[in-house]
Every structure is written in structure tokens, then in C-alpha cells.
Length: 381
Image (cartoon, rainbow, N blue to C red; front, top):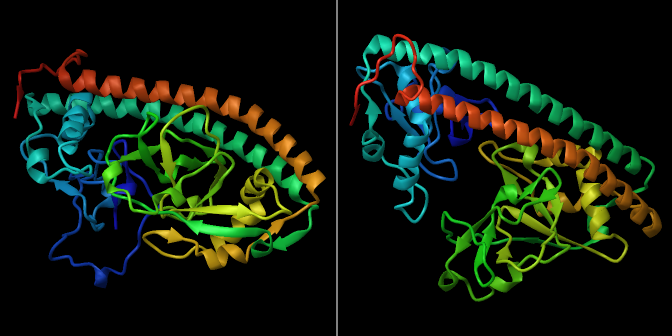
């Protein structure tokens, strides 16, 4: 069954794919997908993203996203139109009209598409198939480089933890608290005096990203909301995710200067170390391959994987003496600084490739890029 998390930049991806027994799927209400149809994310963080159904995915269940069946238009051309900047801007405007990001069928049907002869649409789609595949190959190569650097850093961290004695987590963490998720807006809290709730991706690859939050109306806060406020040095860990690999990702909170008040949501835990364990070392230990493997083993769920606090308390984690903890933290920070700088440079290259891909799609479907054999008429509804 395909979900919003399987739709990414015009493609259907296998990560976090939900599998279901065909006898449990209500095929009368959601018929099998057909090659050439287009799925559009109708709600959530990725509202408006879309992907064409290829032969590989024909027969899959569509989940709860919007389903577009092209008529009198080349399906690939329409799929590219829906990925163009004007279309994405239109979807952004539509989804912002609701309290939560949301699109409906009428809004998608209201998208204006360029008028072009059917054979010309195919010419444009052929060109974009070739050029986007070339860009995607470059992105994949950069992603592999990024992964190798991250893996080398992980091996280095593991070697530091290898000889440390193990101890059950409940003996060294004094508290494990689950957060609270209030009704939030699509925009982020950015200014002092504002309140925001962190998104799951605020904790990613061992780093903390405070800007990844959703603004909360102060009037909607519950009476005890202050107990969910995060502070410098807090250790946050992902409790649940659509991806089993992301469950258990952790990071130390680092807040620079004045900013909004941030709360941690119910999909994150806050771990409070006891006297024998420094928060900085705990953050490094929770990233080690040994601990991550234990978390994957106990993570439960199909649509959304999660780890219970009771399972978290039974993890075996490294616990060297305080002096060795400080030494390991210093080395880990040097490793992170070196690998982080290289990864940041690669991420910049990837971002530029994505920008080029986006500009190419937009120029080709709107006529700004002259494609031989594809004359453009006026845009029509």
C-alpha cells in the first residue's frame, strides 16, 4: 500500500513501504493503481508532492492520497507539469487556506496546464525523462558519497565505544519523558515570544535542528505546557517514525541565542541522564551501531514503527568512567566537525542539482525552454 511517505519528488520510493494482505484491502473503495495515473499527497508535511504510477507499481493499493487519472493529455507530461514551480506554488497557496496542510480534489482539478498538442507533450516528456534521469544519477552518486562518509564516522565512533562496559539504560537514566503534540500551524516559530513544537526531523543523524518546528497559537497551550519546553543540553530521541531506521535517532539540544520557545512532541522522548552519565556522552552512545541495532530489534509497528519507554529502559549502553566519557566526547566532536563539513559541501551540491532539475522541468513545460517539435499554446484550465 502506497502512502504519502512513498511519494518523493515525482517518484514512488520503497522506503517505509506498507505491506498488506490483499484480502484486507477494500478494493471496491480503492481500486488497484493503473500505469499512468498520478498520486498527489493530500495532507501533511508533503502536501502537493506527486508521482506518476509506473508499470512497477501497477496493481498496488493507493492508500489515502489523491488519485489523478489523465484524460486527453500525456500522463508523463501532466506528471511533470504537476512538479513544475507554478504548480507547486499553486498547491502551496491552496493548502495554506486550511488550518492543517490539505488539498482536495477540486483544488487539484483547478490546476492550469499548458495547452500543447499530444505529440508535443510526448516530446517534452521524452526530453525530461532523459535529462532528469541524468541529474538523478548525479544526485545518487553524491548521496552514496555522503553515506560512505557517514559510515566511516560511525565506525570511528563504534571503535571508541568498543571496550566500554555495558549497563542497562534504566540504571543510568533518571527520567524518560514523552512529549506533547498540540494543534500547530504550517509555519514555523522563529521569534522570541513565539512557541513552536518540534517536528520529528528536528532530530536527524545525531544533530539538532531547532528551525524544524511548527508554530503553536499561545491560546491553544495546555496548562502544564512548560514541562515540555526543551533546554540546552537536553537529549531527545525519536519514539516513532514511518521508517524503522529513524526510530531511536537522537541528538543533544543546542540552542544558539534568543529564539522561540520550543516544545518536544509526543513522537520524541526526552532522556535525563543520572549522575554517572553525561548527556553529551549519552548522545554519542545512543548513536553507536550496537545501541541502534538493539533499538531496531525492539521497534514495533507496521505503518509506524515505535519504541516503548519500557524497551528503551532495557537497552544495554556503554558506560566508561567519567574521565573516559569526556575523552570520547571530545573525539566524537572532532569526528563530527570533519565529516560534517564534508557532508555539508556534498549537501550543497545536491541542493544545486535539485534546483537545476526543478528549473529544467519548469522551463520545459511552460515553454521557456524551446524543445524542438513542441510548440506551446496558452495555458488553459
